[in-house]
Image (cartoon, rainbow, N blue to C red):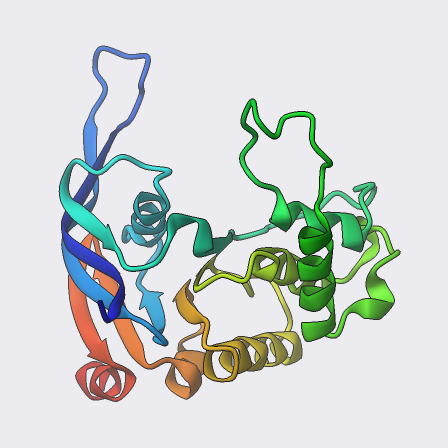
Amino acid sequence: MNFALKIKDVTIKYASNYNSRDSKINIAVKDASFNVEFGDYCCIVGMNGSGKSSLIKGILGLAPLSSGSIEYGVERGKISYLPQINSIPSDFPATVREIVLTGAQKKQTPRNLFSAFYSKEDIKSASNAIELLKITELTKKRFGELSGGQQQKVLLARALCKNPDLLILDEPCAGLDNNTVDSFYELLYDLNTLNKVTVLMITHDLHDVHKYAKHIIEMDTGLLFYGTAKEWEEHDS
């Protein structure tokens, strides 16, 4: 099996005005089909409202599919998600280490309900992620005290805490300055090329798409384009 994800004819619909008899059915994603190969760095681009986030929610199981199918070449527990973060309260009380450790949380069952909250392996994974992203000096700081770029590094460390095979990101650099954006994308590129993490990312940073992505998906409810970054440049010119 050479793919991390196989998306086939996926359609996602939702109803507006759920409590109204006049609710309207909207199509967020229509007949989307593509593969994400192991080791890929795949970027999803498109205008606001083009279905990008809805597609990601469908992949993560957060939105039901109206039709079509998604086949997973990775274990569901080895998929990590970094959502878009627009604002963090300045008085957010948790420390960086506490935030990163939550990435190791496992689903509670009757068997482990009263067991230790974090295992030695969990703590080691969190420490490894902190060292990998070079944020050791931040571990005792409160999350809400950090800059936007530092916060995104912490959340990325959290996502890496369970050593994912597939990392899914939704506009991870929204609202960050250009220097921070460049640094963050270089970090993702290193994770992809050196640590062999497959990346699927929604982005509006088209300039950086050219530099780092292997494949591009352009959406407008349906797929307008799917191919290599070079093919997309030629298509878009």
